[in-house]
Amino acid sequence: MEIVFIASALVGGMVLFWLIVLYNRLVKARNQLKEGWSGIEVQLKRRHDLIPALVECVKGYQRHERQLLEEVVRDRGLAQAASGAGEAGRAERALGRDLVRIVALAEQYPELKADEAFLGLMEDLVEIEDHLQYARRYYNGSVRDLNNVVESFPANLVAGGFGFKVAKFFEVDSIRERLPPDLASALKSE
Image 1 (spheres, helix red, strand yellow):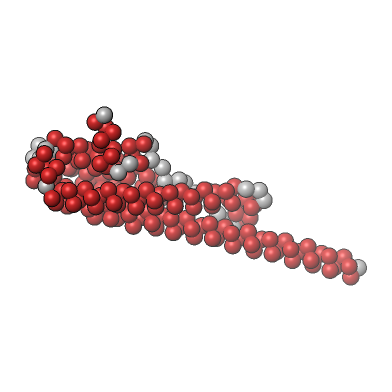
Image 2 (tube, rainbow, N blue to C red; image 1 turned 90 degrees about the horizontal axis):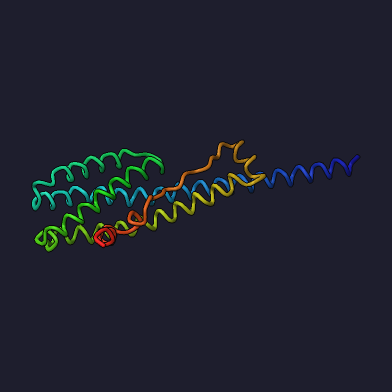
């Protein structure tokens, strides 16, 4: 009788230990996901903060491109208001297309392309896009890690019991959207 009690206590302790380790693994994966999303938000804010200066710079050179500039401002607002990876991804894709169109506009106007303020803004934008690409990779890696734990058996039983859910990837649709705007516009012209 005593052996059965000890064996039951040992098995119960091992199961409890396994649940604690698994729960902590899920918490760690969720926290990495939050950290990854935070990195994306920082880069998106930098991008959003750069847009008004870029619009003003282009506005001085191009009066009849008002529709493009209005779209950029509208899409910036939508991107800033977006929440979650899915909604933010859609909003940022639209904003990225607008930024590529602004860069393409500069190709039509040599004086704009030579403007020091515009060139400085373009350098900043390319740097931000590079950092954003790295942040997306980190976030998507964190999504993968969390989803692997949440969807794997028997961890999925514990994950479901504690409210852990599968996360969405921050995706881009095309290769052009994965590139900095200066490279994307170069591909477009080819």
